Image (cartoon, rainbow over all chains, first blue to last red):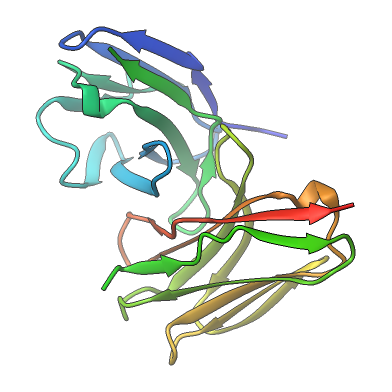
Length: 112
Length: 110
């Protein structure tokens, strides 16, 4: 069964460093998303991406964040200068339309 | 008032019991309603998807949406220990953003 793949599963970084989280969405999907979940809190929307551009973003997704689909298969989230409060599980998701989202297993980001 | 409210539980039931989960919401623009299952340190897995009001059944799972009351439910019949997980409700309107509930942790005791 096709699935959304995320790498790495764990990422540890120093505050102020740049990180790139990688995702391979399901191959025929057109809508791509990043969500995050801080430990013990709700899953929160960060950004949606369709037709090679950001379609919607939350207030969390400030200038420190960017997304890119560098080729036909990868979808990346970059955090330019990480803060302690960026520590969370980051989930990539994809869908053929807006109805059903399929999530990856996540990247646990720890900012020290 | 929170946009989506969900009792975090925990909920513990014996094997074979019916599990009843629910969420309330405040945004009348929500039209698409989903239930996800999440195991510890894993991504949410889509269980049920419903558009607008009504019932939907899939095997042991039944999802209900009452838009007039802004209330959605998920029922799990003949619960199994493998159903032990956190169940998340999620919903959205005509935009891209899914709004999640806090999740209810369910334990099914053998």
